[in-house]
Structures are given as structure tokens and as C-alpha cells.
Image 1 (cartoon, one colour):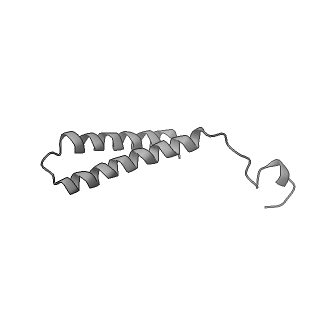
Image 2 (image 1 turned 120 degrees about the vertical axis):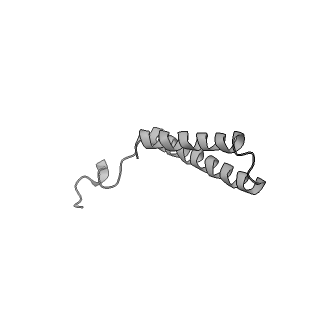
Image 3 (image 1 turned 135 degrees about the vertical axis):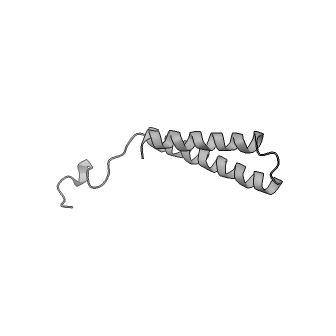
Amino acid sequence: MNWAAIALVGGFGFLWLGVVVFAAVDSTAVARLAQGAFGIILMSWALHKTALMLRRPRDTPATGPHHAGTPL
């Protein structure tokens, strides 16, 4: 995963939510709620991936110092 994909998904979720709130006034309430939930899910996925990317990387068992001598 890279930063461009995270930014695109988050930006799309934000725009999607804006369209649902301001432009889709003729839709039914259930459709607007479902589409709004979809936009919120996209934005929360992007925030979650951003938090994961900003965390300090840990040593993986295959490359960590404790397992350097073990074969893969």
C-alpha cells in the first residue's frame, strides 16, 4: 500500500459524502444513509491505513535480529 492509494480512497470518500449530502436530495432516506455510510467507510479505511503507515515498523521474525541465523 502506498500513500497515493490511501489519499485517493480518502479523497474519493470525502467527495462521495459531499455529493450524497448536498446533491442527492431527491434520493430516498435509506439510499442516502447507505451511500453516506459507504463514504464514511472509505474515509475510515483511509484513516486506518494512514495510522498503520505512520507507526514505527517492527522487526519481522524472518528479518529480525533474533532469527538472523535460521533458514527460511
